View 1 (spheres, rainbow, N blue to C red):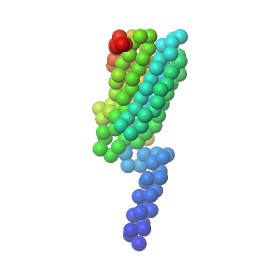
View 2: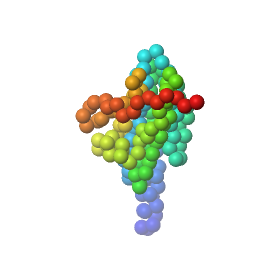
View 3: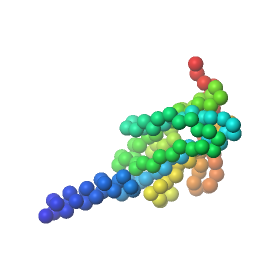
View 4: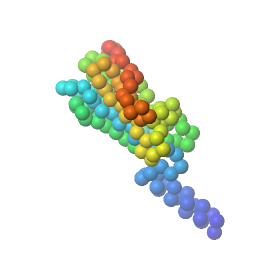
Length: 139
């Protein structure tokens, strides 16, 4: 009887993970283009998930929700291109998970592309912080 109860509880945890994170923290990464009259190319992926290519027009965004893995080694890396410039960066990793965490199942990690660089939103201070400059695009 105990085995059936344990398997039932385990099954509920596994199936509920598609709607909410029950054992680990849930996060939403959002990337928005804030460069007027421009398209920004974004390609993001983790070790397990390739989120594909996205061309974001002004004020357009891409976002995804995920549950952090048990070891807190979840990492999403993105490649950005705009106007002969580019940047590669982690939009989520262990350190950013700590910074984005606000005790919610949808802890937000928000990023924006601007003409002078790529910004991250600090949930604690409610301010946008420039984290990266654009680099000249390599040929």
